[in-house]
Image (cartoon, rainbow, N blue to C red; front, top):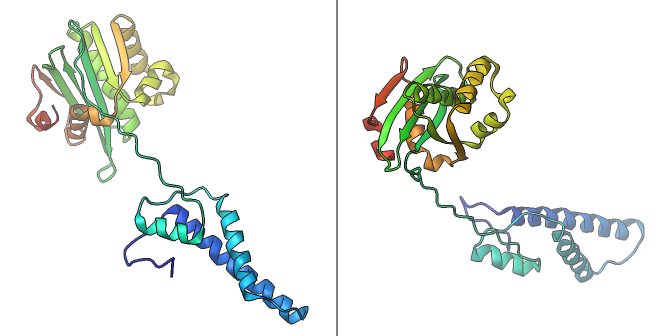
Length: 249
């Protein structure tokens, strides 16, 4: 059988659509042929019925949207039936790396986390200079059980710490979600709206720049945020990163 499936294997979306089409189409033409024989007294040519089924399947397959797995087995099946193959597009590979800021600027990376198992949230951040040296890091738990609130609080606390240390040339590198909050402050969780407004005021007094970074390039902040979910309060580290972050640097 051309649709034979090995145990433990799965069919691609295109093959599943093709199987459904073949099954339904075959049943329909068998039923239609049976009615013609029984009620109309007509003779039905089995070869012609098979040809009609094949033509209908090929025509219907043009309306399908699924893609095949890029394997020889599926190519053989699709070619045997006579339908057009739709291979999956090659994945887009993006290299994600952390890059240091220009001289005189401090790059800030923050992140928030929420653990469903413990229903606890945490946040963290790290400051690094043009050489990649860690100038400071922090992490803390959060009473609001929300990863979104944790991400917002991470930026609030980071800007507060930078303000106290008079670091006025800040480049925030964070998720697209946080950047959207910078553009639209009313979107932040209501519990943090006042603190967010104060944060935006401090940012307005800084030489501030922001950009997006994928999670793969934000591993240090991610590690700090996860550590924050298990901490009992704010932990600040000046001039160094904690040992649990070394693998991410």
